[in-house]
Image (cartoon, rainbow, N blue to C red; front, side, top):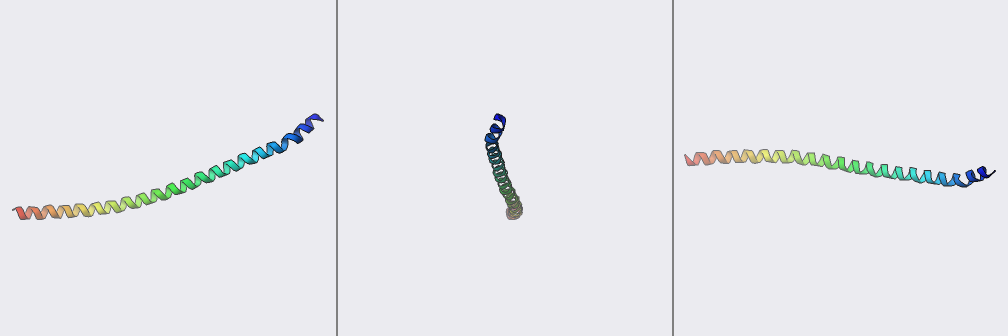
Length: 76
């Protein structure tokens, strides 16, 4: 009979603890998923910025090449 009383006493506590752990794990997973999504978005933006920067660098290189050609023509 004493064992039955112990089970009746501690079962709600164990269930509450398990629910708390599951809730904490769920919220932790949701936070990690949110951070992963934000990081993915930032990475995509960085790739787009890198492509735009690459195009700008190509334009700067072309302009610099044209300047060198024109300076070479003027000095001869």
